[in-house]
Image 1: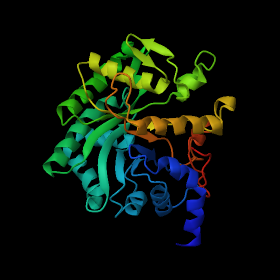
Image 2: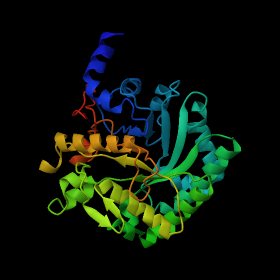
Image 3: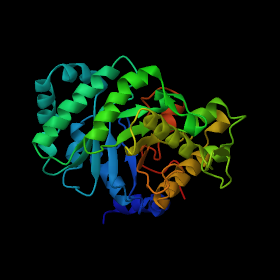
Image 4: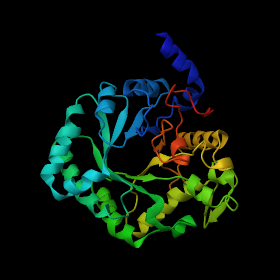
Amino acid sequence: MDCLKKTLLFLLSCTSILLSNATNVGLNYGLLGDNLPSPPQVINLYKSIGITKIRIFDPNVAVLNAVRGHQDISVTVGVKDQDLAALAASEEAVKTWFATNIEPYLTDVNITFITVGNEVIPGPLGSQVLPVVKSLTNLVDSMNLPISITTVVSMANLGQSYPPSSGTFTPLAREQLTPVLNFLSENKNVPILVNMYPYFPYASDPVNIDINYATFNTNAIVVQDGPLGYTNMFDAMFDAFLWAMEKEGVKDLPLVVSETGWPSSGNGDLTTPLIASTYNGNFVKHIESGKGTPKRSNCSIDGYIFATFNENLKPAGTEQHFGLFEPTDMKPVYKLF
């Protein structure tokens, strides 16, 4: 083992303790930085801390080449938002996109999900998602590939979310998202991926929202919703989305948390390394407990932390400080355990 790898393993020891068995926890691998480590270094980092699931936002050639041969790492690959219009208009364009961006890696990269757009529903691009999801699904089915096709949405689809049982979609979400959910439900019950950040509602009202409730840091029931009691905001948000889906007639569809996290800087006392480590550490423990949420207590949750690195080309402020690691030396921003 070379000196660099020994040093890296030493620096990551605390993180590795927490994540080494985190089979249901993945990491988002963002690339909006001009000082990021090379993709092979990043893949070695993931291997060192036991990460077996990663999500990339587009079919980045350097990343996909770096993960070749690492079949123990499952990869979620995104279709870029700017590609949706052309793909929605032509099945041939979808076939060309797939042949260019996915097919070259099928033999030695474990691609498990392709996500069509990132948080474009609800919005002006939202109607383009379903035709692309259908075309890609038909394509992978025709090739007998074990790849699930879905999309990534945000909590902005909810017009109401408190208490969780009142969860309902906005009119535009009902128009754009519900047909996608119905298709996923009818097609092998493919999960919907949802970005879910308790940080944002907490930051908008820190006076009235308990920080311990927002960071999984209490066992006391804070919100009682009929027979269901909530000790943390994450579960309440998760279940609000489930309730909203059920009101559209979509029941038992799996929900994967495609992003969650807490910034370590950028918004004063609301974003410290201690709070970020508390939230992310407790999130991992919660996921690994297998307990699920009050509404789905018998179903474990899959989730991805955002993000691997602090990315300096993202908008200034908290957006640059969601990373678990510093890009220049790959040292942990804070200890997760």
